[in-house]
Amino acid sequence: MLIGFTGAQCTGKTTMLNMCKNTFSNYNFVDEVTRKVGRMGRVINEQGDDLTQLFILKEHLVNHVIPDDENWILDRCILDGYVYTRWLFEQGRVSGWVLNHASCLLSMLGERLNHILYTCPDHIPMEDDGGRSINKQFRDEIIGIYDKLFNSTMFVPGKNTWRHKVVKLSGTPEQRMYQIKTLINNEQ
View (cartoon, one colour):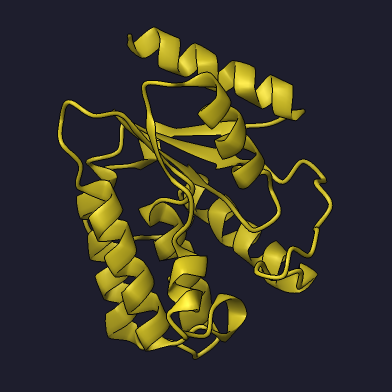
């Protein structure tokens, strides 16, 4: 089984991933994508460019190809790769062909995911941890792209392989964890 978290920065993805690590001993976990690329010397977040996004998309490709008999939970999934590439394209920071590449990967890799766990913003405060962006406008614009995607008002080229797999997590961390446990227990 392959499960991926998705959502804007500072919406509880890492908190939920850490809770999953303490709950699901039969799962493997991928902790990060963007920061890994940042450690390679690439600019990340709202400063990203074509090369940054290509490296991030490559990480998603690697993370989404797992053996069928293994269980994995990803800190971020290909939907993040698409959303952030879309935002960077809208800002003129990445080329159209890179956005098209992200669209194609979303179509292809979205099919591999069993569930996409969207962490709703739920008024979670932004905390500076030295790696994530705490730019409120950037965060709000990312949330806006997710809203358009989930409400089918934004066209994404390729096959729609992923929209029906999105589960919106909301509430306290404990309430979100209950949603995740219910989802995973129903799969077993």
